Image (cartoon, rainbow, N blue to C red; front, side):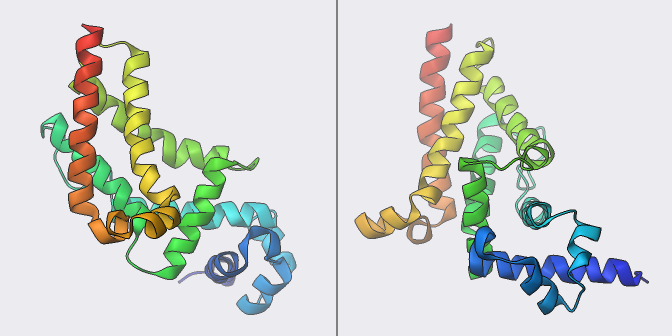
Length: 212
């Protein structure tokens, strides 16, 4: 059985997800979070250290759940061809961006995107725990696709893959208005992942030939 402290910490975390999603980081208050969680205001500092660190805990929980549901390999074995693993990686990213249709997931995803664009002082830990290891997986796949290429070329190509995926997330509202039939929701993850993969493979092949 969990201790009362563990139960309080979990309640605060669950309520904080709702409050941060509803109000954003600036407008969310420790008082409201603790009030809705039935906890003392001092409990946030005790369990998390500060409101900002509580927000990082919420994002960490969000990223951990997303990676469990949509792992970078999407179930493919490490022996699968690199082009198949590249498409799986792209599918994983797009699924993480799209979520499962839960509005709360989408709002938390938007808050996470804001952190990527303008990281706060506590975001480095999440980068080290979640982002960097996943990106190294992608860089490894790219290196297999362009053996002998320079480190610079491999990292640039990996950045291009991520950037193309991010386009359909960060520009979601604009795409919905300009070309609604090209939005991530309309196209669907599988067809879009296949297109992005083929597009990126062509670019990687061009870069590989230039590096040869």
